[in-house]
Length: 369
Image (cartoon, rainbow, N blue to C red; front, side, top):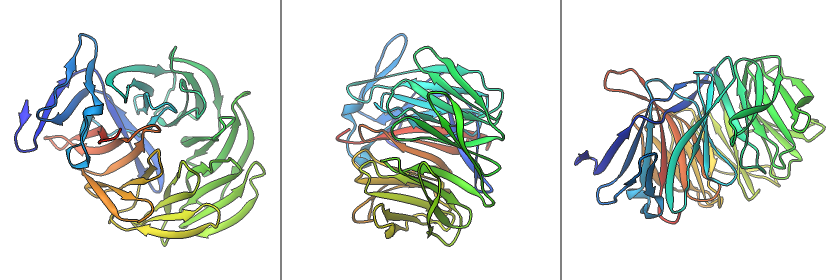
């Protein structure tokens, strides 16, 4: 079907689904269920279909204003998405207690199929890939467990039960440790080899997204106080407190080149910080609602940010200027650039024509992927 008003062709097949994450009192919560897959592309570009998969040449995607969009839609809101280290797989976690792996080939033909990971007994609220292994993924769930999976076999290889509902999870860049944050503002560090806790710390303030720097010797906590807490690693001793924003800090992203980190806040601003000096260089001001999610692209040239505004902003990191905005029908809750090319995965909280929740996931691509 060709929609002449938008200039896009829509193809639909009931094979895949989507999910988003939302902030509840500064915390992340997931909802979702996968249902259908839609592919949008500019009229004139021809997708290729096979009996078992949907295929198209992503390399044909033109520049920003004529970008390729791959769209996954569900009947309910959905969680966040994460690319593996080679950029060939996308992972998703859902309120239906499962995670899914979508196999995507960004270069040449794009083949989309999904693998389901089952075992959790509550919603899969967050997940992250091993930065050194393209097939290992960790999931954090409201059932208080963290699980390690092999995407090739779809089997859980490790499991640990922690003290609370887990809402944030991230790998140390060398793949040796995993940090987990729960709804009770407790931080747990897991040794990946033994898959057992080696550090636990309870905080008396709201802790949101967490991250390591690229060398793994600094650990960041974003807080509901508008600060970023800087901890030495592995000691977790306090090094500094950055008075980053006038309202709670919700999210953090690390420049893949290790030069900067960015912080998104409830004050609607995104601040860019020099990693060595720990000084704010400039702010991105295009959004008008609390910033929910951030991501640097693989070269560190661009940063994507999103909120309840009806667009995703893509800005130049060095100049601070907005260079493109992706229109959205509703709040966006998760954005993540592919680690190898300029493909942006994002999840939203759309409504369908009956005004029921319709969580949406898309992949946005442009020239030079």
